[in-house]
Image (cartoon, rainbow, N blue to C red; front, side, top):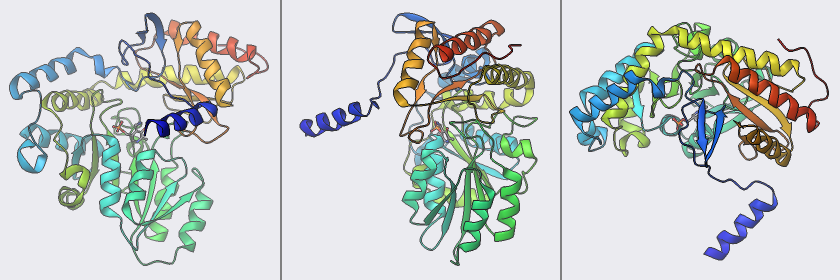
Length: 396
Ligand code: PMP
């Protein structure tokens, strides 16, 4: 079999798409060590800085000392503790739903929900830029999946209108798109769902804790808590820990406990993670200044990089993607940034479509003004040197 692996790897290399792991001292701080050198990190999902907050660490350690390092079983056997149920209630409160259910990751929440709720005779309308875990959930579900052009409401409506089946209809969208940082047009999606009698699932992995006055996410941002049926989220980004969840009606959650295979057959999340997540969910709501700082930092980078002439989609979130196009050029750009002490990874196919390789910047609330200015200066300089941008605009 090794011959086969060798040939596959050579084919991947020939396309310039080989992926390698880098060892970071941490993925949570603004300054990190990577293989002996120091870098300013602009690619962490620790948006609010909670993963390194002392209160989360203390809660995690306390959880471990009270209950142990592992949960000891699946939720439906011996792994269900009072703290799991408390966290589920707290997530439901944050999301404005009746109930929620935990999964080991956001990935498994999407797969578990979609594959158990949607089946033969049903149809899923899925945004073309949705996350891989949504795509995998659709594939496992046996429902017909119809992709609509990214955030294109005319295309979605055309496809809804053309569908003739009698089964359930589900529109699935990321709340904040993970590669471009743009926000889904939820008010329009809600209107179409009503018109065509469809349900809505929003994957708010990147919106949770980041958008909305209380950090409730994209649905909160638009004030649509009563219109969106189901929300998937992760605890691994703004919340600062790991794990995923589905929030929705009590009946939906009861159903998932009975039917979602990625819930039933997985060991429950461990006590340290649960307790830290509870503290993260609390701080998201009681320390809005973190969110304000995050969005201010993101706005600073977005406006300054746009002024320099980069092609950036309409992002008002902490994800800012500089479109480069060619995969090799994107990698070179990232490597030159590393020489200047800045770590921003290149994102290439198959994560993004051919010809849309990019540098994906993620901002944190904990970045300093100096770090933000440094990245603007170096990214601009390298962009001009490589011919990715042609001229310098006004900097603020
Ligand atoms: N949905 C989206 C939009 C994501 O970006 C991610 C994480 N990359 C996930 C789901 C999966 O979440 P998790 O990392 O918790 O599995």
